[in-house]
Length: 267
Ligand SMILES: C[S@@+](CC[C@H](N)C(=O)[O-])C[C@H]1O[C@@H](n2cnc3c(N)ncnc32)[C@H](O)[C@@H]1O
Image 1 (tube, rainbow, N blue to C red):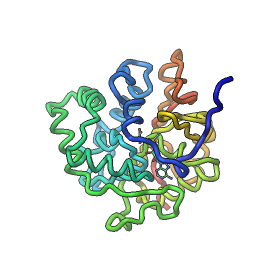
Image 2: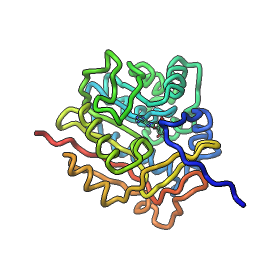
Image 3: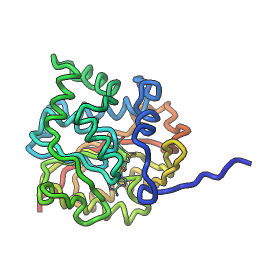
C-alpha cells in the first residue's frame, strides 16, 4: 500500500531552502532545453525585461524563497530592490547569499547572462543585484499590509515581481483574490506586476514535504486579475509555447505555467 501524501501549507511548516534549490534549480534538476519549465520561465522573464520598458526606482519581489531570479532580470532597470518572503529560513538564506556566504545561483545566472548577450559577466551582474538589494524582509500576502518592516513599510513600488508564490500562498480562490488586493496596495497606479505561476496544480513537493497549491485555470486567472483592476499586457503560457511537452513531474502536478505582465489601472 502506498503511503498517503500529506499536504500542508507554508503556514504550517517551513521548507528547506537548500532542498528547494537542488530540487528545482540545480544543474541536474534543470535541463536548459526547450520544453523545460525553468527555461520557459527564464526566457519569458528575459523577454519581458530586455527592452527596459519595465523600469523605475523601487521594485519588490514577493515570495522570493531562496531564488532571486526575477530580481536579477529587473536589476538593470531599477535603483532599489526589496526581496521578501513569509519564511524566516528563506530570508536568512537570502541574506547569506547577499553577504557572499552562499553561491547557489550559478546555472540560472549563467543562462540569463547568455540570453542578455551583453558584455557584462555573471559576476558583475550578480554584484549589481547584491548592491541594489536594499531590503530583505518578511512578507505575508494574506495581510492587508503584507510588509510591516520599517523602512519598507510605506514604500509604494513602481513594479512588483513574484514567482511561484501566490498559488501556494492561497488555499482558496477567496484567499487568492485577497492576496491580489493586498499586494496591489503596494503597487503604484500604472505600475506593472510580472507574475510567474502555475495552472491547475494541486501540490508541489520539497523533499519529504508536500505543499498544497491553489487549483486555478487560465480563464479564471485572467478574469480575477482583470476584476481586481489589472490590464493584462502579456500572458505567456508554457503549454502554448511547447504544446507537445508533458508539463507534469513527480514533484508537482501542474498542467501548465505562465508568465504574465499586467498593469494596475489608474483610478
Ligand atoms: C514555490 S516557492 C517560490 C520561490 C521562488 N520565488 C521561485 O520562483 O522559485 C514559494 C515561496 O512563497 C513563499 N510564501 C508562502 N506563503 C507566503 C505568504 N503568505 N506570503 C509571502 N510569501 C509566501 C514561501 O515561503 C516560498 O518561499
